[in-house]
Image (tube, rainbow, N blue to C red):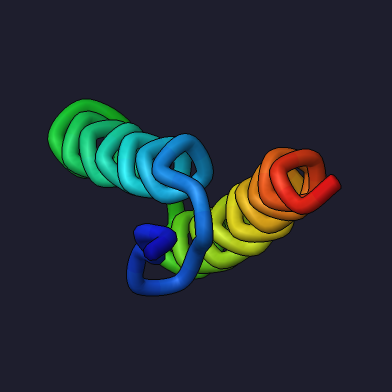
Amino acid sequence: MERKYILFHTGKAALFLFYSLVMLLLFLFYAKLTQEIPQANLVGGSILYVAIMAFYAISIDRRLHGNRNR
């Protein structure tokens, strides 16, 4: 039986997405405390960052999951 994670088939893709979201939260916390960045820029940048990281995690998952089936 193959282990499947919530959204991904491989643990590598799931961990990559988890740690990329942790890094985003740390950056947002740091930016909120030390920088004067407009709220709209933070929200827009965060959405773009999450979208890019999700697509990259999906590509990691497809690449690694596809190699196991061959």
